[in-house]
Length: 228
Image (cartoon, rainbow, N blue to C red):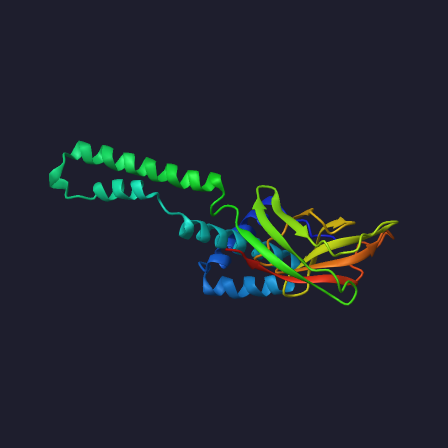
């Protein structure tokens, strides 16, 4: 079992701040070169950097996708008329109302799932181990992680200690298990890593033999892409 190096909370927090700065491009050149070397040598740091990059990407997407309702846009435009047409007190109140309305609109979009629950999908293709299986998976961001809904009706049912296991893989070959099942119809799995970084979804045949690593017996493979 891989043991992670213990570190103090202060060191961990400082490292997280630097990883966030590296992810958004604000880290100084001198420190960036050293931190990039540290990241290249540490799977743990690579995973944490990927989390920071994902958070930044989701934030930027949310900002880009949020649009105020048409009525709100008209109201904000009305507040932008020349100041001479209204008193200073009215201008302050109107500005406050517009700001509150804009915040309410953004909050409503967030609560409805727009921008905060990005959607992804993967078309799953069969291998020679299950030639009759075809299906797809959808991945939706939730507060607890990524919900993965899988539907592959042509996948033969496994039982008697045999089962299927789904995995997400990144571009350097790191595999993360996201759940097991016996039948490919209406399966719900959960992932703790983001499909923005782990972009390959595979399903393998496994047995309850105490070995937690992948058997390598892939029956389905798909590439995860953003939906919509």
